[in-house]
Amino acid sequence: MQWHYKIGSLINQPVGISLTNGQGTSGILCGVIDGQLHVIEYLYQAQFALKKYDLYMIQDINGFPLCQRQSRIY
Image (tube, rainbow, N blue to C red; front, top):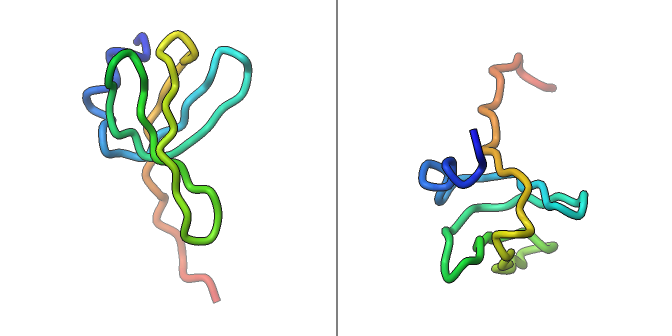
C-alpha cells in the first residue's frame, strides 16, 4: 500500500516516518495541510515541536505497533 493511502487512519496516532534522504523520524501525526505532513515531535524534557515535512520528502509512514503483554518487571 502506498503511504498516502494510510494517512487518514493514522491522524492523531503515533507514527514512524521514513524520509527519502534515508533519515527517519517519529511523532504524532496531526494531518496534511497545504502539501505538508504535520507531526508533533518530542524534543527533550517537556518540550515538543510541530514539524512540517513536504510530501515529496516522505518515503513511507507507518503506525506504531501495539505493545505486547509482558510479565511484570521488578
